[in-house]
Structures are given as structure tokens and as C-alpha cells.
Length: 343
Image (cartoon, rainbow, N blue to C red; front, top):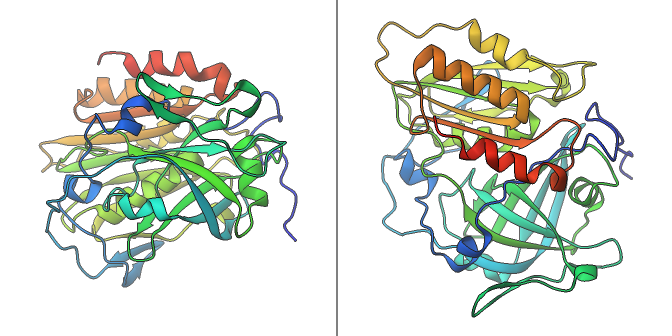
């Protein structure tokens, strides 16, 4: 029997929910109009999970420089079943999904965005939207699924299994509550993948930063980095119990775990303060950054990196997943204003 999860320092059920949704162009994702190169292609490497451990970073034995020639597909809304549910830490749940439609899911898209469709409280499984001649056809309001965006943690094409990690914050939340109580055979909808190309721009030195909502994508990015990659990674979690073992082939990557402790998620400046303490290595000629998480933290880090290192959208991916004090629906419009800003 699983322990009940309530606040987890992430606010009240109604006002301070995690918002991990990124509203990509849903019609284009489902129809496959936009094109995205798999992350393995972007960084020109594949992942080997075996290796040795250096501190809390597992160093893989090799990274094979062999880009895939297969262009990724996007699968339209499909129904998947839960294969397994595992608690990774007090407030992180890993759900493994499977379904016939995953045979068409592209390889090498770890860290990419996917749409998940959750059932309403009166439903056993979600009723999915379909693609009609003029676009998306949604079910009636009372049956419309709750839609959120998450990151692909891992995809195993041999087993046709896709793994998604969920931050647990409130049992009444459509996504968090579903993940907390998910059991083998439960149904959920999926469409995608999508997202920026590349997630992390090539550079001599990388700065990667995020909170727990960004940890799945950060973990996937690290696994795809080539051996010669260098940089600093900042991950804000509640306390040491939320740390995860991270695997990477990159021997020049430094991991900085930051602990918010009793402070509510979204109210700290831990990541910005830590980033301000590092200096650009003398030999570095190019820099790229990836930042995700709470709105205020992302904007402040983005602005600092723009001013300090002269970064812009081509080498700085900064996306707010959620905003303190707002739920997903209340934050959606403002979030896209932030993402549409030119820099």
C-alpha cells in the first residue's frame, strides 16, 4: 500500500500545483507536420547504460557516434496500458507504459515532450481526441480528457515500452494523482513526441538547470551527451532523499544538487545563486544552456545567462513548466508569452 502524498512542499491542492504541461502545437504533433530530430542524432551519440560511478554520476563505458538515418514519426493519440509503477524517491514515481501504437514511436527521443491524456474522475480510461479533416476533434466537455505534457524518460523499442517519471505533489491532481495510484493495466492516452531541435545546442561548455519537474529531461540529456562534453548541471530538489543516480558518458560534467528543504518549490533562488558562482572555463569558446522548471526561476536564470554570457534562443533553451500559485489552465496563456519572447 502506497503512502498518501499531500503537499510535498509544492503548495495547496488548488493554488500551488505543479504545472509540467507544455502546450505544443497539438494538431501539428498529431499530424506529424513539424519535424524533430531524435536527441541521439542531435548530440551524435547513443547511450550505453553500463559503467562505473564517479561521485553520484555514473560514467558509461562508451558513447557510439552513429547518428540514425531514420526520421522520427509522431504518433496520433493512442491508448496505452501501465506495465509497471515504481517509486524512485519520496516524490517521484516512474510509470512504464506499453501498447501496440508504440511500434511506431521513434527511437532516440529521450527527453522529448509527449502529450498525455488522463481520464476524468468518472472514467476508467480517457476518451481520446481524433484527427478530422479540419483538425482535432475533441470529445464532449464532460468526457474531454485532462491533457498534460511530460518528458520521455526512456523508450525501449524492443519491448515497446515507454517510461515517464511523475513528480508527486497532490493526490487530487489529475496527473500526479493518477501516477500515485496507477496499477498494471490502467489506461492513459499519449501523442507525440515533439519539442525543440536540439534540446541542448552543441557547445564547448553547457549549463543545465532545473527543479524536480525537469529532472527526467535532464537525466535523459545527460545520458545522450558525448564523452567530450563539459559543463555544470544544477538540480533543485527537496532534500538528499530526492537525489537519483545519473548516468552519462561525459567525464567533464559536474553535478550540483541543491536542496530547498522547508522552502516551498517555486519560491527559492537556489539555482540562480549557484549558477552565479561558477565561471566560464578559460578554454571555452562556445556556451549553450538548457533551463526548465518554475516560471520565476527560469526567467531569472535566462535573463542572467543572456546578460552574463550573451546567450540567445539558438543556444539557450529556457522553458517554464509551471508557475507557483497557478494550476495548468490558469498559467497556460502567460507561459506562452514567456516562451514567445525574443532574445
